[in-house]
Image 1 (cartoon, rainbow, N blue to C red):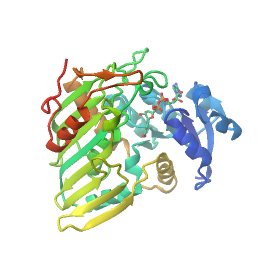
Image 2: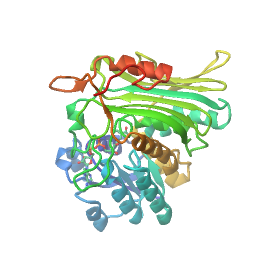
Image 3: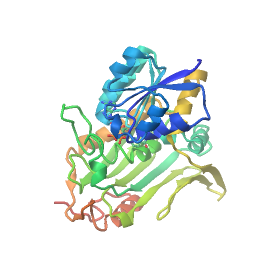
Image 4: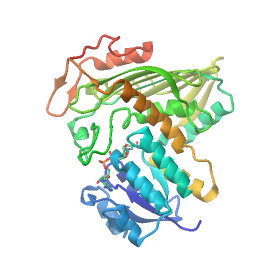
Length: 383
Ligand SMILES: NC(=O)c1ccc[n+]([C@@H]2O[C@H](COP(=O)([O-])OP(=O)(O)OC[C@H]3O[C@@H](n4cnc5c(N)ncnc54)[C@H](O)[C@@H]3O)[C@@H](O)[C@H]2O)c1
């Protein structure tokens, strides 16, 4: 393929990361940013840089495709738009790199995957850990049997979020549906900390197909005035035999912030990233005899997704995050929603002008993570 034509849907919010990469990263030259689709471009931080680079901006995908073609559409728009925009781009002949989660529901995700098959186009999902060099090395060791079978995989993320987070963009955060009735189901588990649930399923699945949940218990909770939940605990059994523990929250007080920690126990040792009270950077595997394999510092950023997608399209490289892998995450989220259609409301909520939080929640969630228990079992009270 000669020069690759790329269109970006959504230039603000997370889309700005793509704007910066596509405009400023010169390690790959053989592409052109053929256009940007964003009806609110005036709010995008990169609008001036896009203007200076001469990148045309359109209000709708239809307007872009009326005048241009694109080999690749990168879609970083709000979740309720994923299905409609991804299917449209595929129908126009573009391959698609779609931001996570694949869609608001697993069914919608499957419809996008079906559309990609019908159109004969590649559909990649933007869970960046799947594209990270260190993580891919660990994955290769798992696939080659060097880690043994997965036994117990756990992840903990406590990221406080304020009112500005929930009010951002077009106001879809924490909602079940938008004003047009389109499904959203945005939550702490489908959005900001989605990566850490997806990673456990992806890493321990066969090749890049992901593992599935066969049995589970879960609780979802909220302190914020949202329709979904800002705190979740999922204790699951996977079809590969492993137990999964996923503990995440946006409702802890800032002093209890905990960057992602994960600990994955396999027959032959333990993979680790981060630790309690620490911010992780390095991925390691400690074998039973104490030997440590260092996979190096992780760089799960957006650039790898774009360059990998180019390699997939140009050289037939293997796509590490196909729809099948992302659908495992969507299935898990849906199971949680079916089991807990309404979140519990925390009894003890503190607030100031910026945010709400639940005093002491972080310590209880750490207990859930360590002892594999639900939050109510750790003593949290609901209304
Ligand atoms: N991979 C990651 O780490 C990561 C991080 C944050 C968000 N995301 C994902 O990125 C996506 C966008 O999330 P966000 O928080 O940036 O959302 P956002 O509400 O900030 O919007 C992103 C951009 O989409 C634009 N937009 C709105 N309606 C549009 C339309 N009809 N057509 C084209 N553009 C439109 C907005 O103007 C904005 O510039 C979501 O899928 C989210 O889960 C991924």
